[in-house]
Length: 238
Ligand code: GLP
Image (cartoon, rainbow, N blue to C red; front, side, top):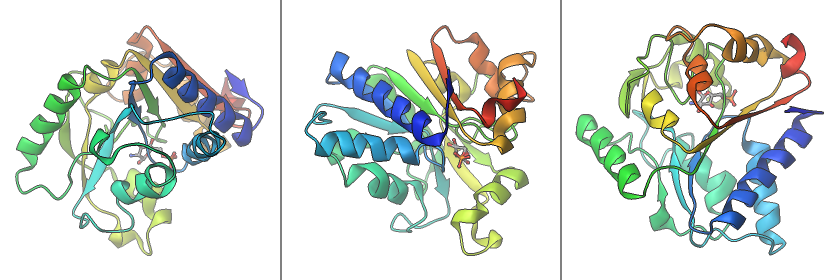
């Protein structure tokens, strides 16, 4: 669906998430970070403040987290989620999950995350952003589609794109934990948000390129229930 602009995209994304919770109050949501979903989180916080929505029974699982930033660091994804959603709505802290990038045993942490997802019954609705190089979560080009939650080395391009959130580029972590492509595709429904002219090429590749590990987002072509919300700028190449 092509949206007029970023505001429109954010409103529609918020409405889909709110609709999901209305259909099933104990929904399991898969959540993304980055610049793109910020407007959607704003919409959801507003709906909650108006009394139109409650997250009391909702469980959330985030896609990914940096490794190498202290848990209390203001730029990790725990902090992002707190700022944009968790502190603004009535989600119960014990129902919000992110990978622990500070875990001593990272392999065990990846397994723990997969187990938690399984025990929660899987994700009902997964929100996704799209990286310029086709990454979803932090699944960089070349990641096997059979991957589950794992540790990744971040692509230099990804570090560069995310450097805007840090004081200097060298502060951007080199590693992260991410849900794998198989983990993401296991969600019953997926909502992809794509905004801005700089994402136009990536969006067109996601939709029209042959399915290839060289461009991870093409894996979404294999999923039966994906909605893409793109603003007019991002849709310029379609
Ligand atoms: C980041 C995140 C992804 C996000 C993507 C796009 O690196 N790990 O979860 O969806 O890249 O980010 P943005 O929305 O800021 O363009």
